[in-house]
Length: 313
Length: 168
Image 1: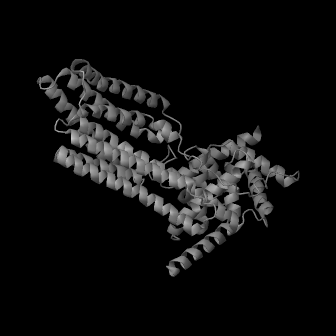
Image 2: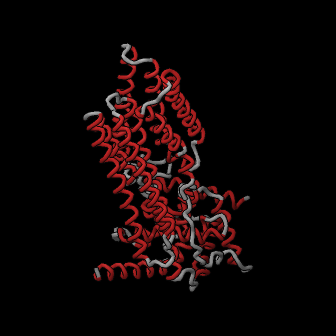
Image 3: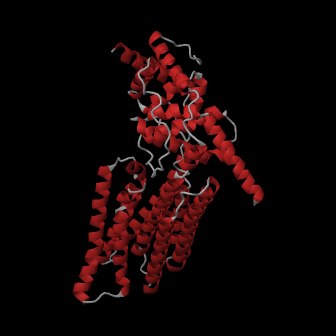
């Protein structure tokens, strides 16, 4: 049955009512060209939202790798840590400045063409900032940690780019919102998503295995073990949290959000204990040991991600 | 640069013309997906923005009408399901309550139709609107992105639901 042949009296009544709509709207102005132009002003809201989303994802992708970097980097020098701090500060500042520029600009008088150009500019800026950021991390990891960490960063970079360009989440017609009747859409995209996620999970597990091996072998002190385990817990919590972003956006997954926040808090305590311990014993903290403090601030910021995400309007 | 400007101007003119030609379709979709008439204005804007964003990429593989229905329904479904957060709005000022105001017979009938369709799930609303538009099952399937047999099953269920509303 491919045509509308299933007509019943009750339904015909509805059809007739529907036809009345056409008659009633006939000759009505409804919308003027000026109103159409005005409507496109909403683009501003959209690209602000997209930009914030892109920033969120940049930080999201960077934080786990930063934490892993610290967790597995006995080679990391104090100089390296300060380079990181300065880089992160500049990166966040640039993002904030760009967002402020978007919010402050008066777009009310712009025509469609200029609006479109502005939108393109903001999107390109967001993308360029992220690319520069990831390039920095790849080079940084290569010099400070070696080729392995650099490859891990590259994987994360590709994953984040895919996420930003909505490669993994793009909707194809209604397919994503229809649940039961038919085959799953976007199989290729799902496969790529799981491929990247799989690599990330394997890398993380290998790191964890390395740490446990060192701890059992006695090459790691209990305090070092505690701190590194804390870093790993936070990292995993972030990765899991990333998978739930879509649900948070729909106002779901609140329980998971709470579990993740608590997990991150536990990880933070584990990271903090060795610092306090070191301070009590040595009465001093060298600048290298300040790195967990820096990570802590970043972690707290990131643990607010759900709230941050909710506020994207 | 001037050439590009001209092209953009033409694009804008074409777009405005197209929207005004199909304004009734957009309005009808928005009307059936809003909880109250005031929201029609917001939805209308959201649809316009999405149409504008997609317009340069629209290659005419489907008819303008089909494309327009797809974008309008997609947008309205996403907003109704709360998947899309509303961006700050500039009041559009369209006449948002044209259909259900008035005491004439046609207004009452339209209100009755609105009340029934509004009781359906978001996705079912989209399908029944396309059916009311007298589109074939194949066309409906193409627009909503499900198989024709899925459309048949869905429509059967929706019609049963509507009939029971009528009996009640």
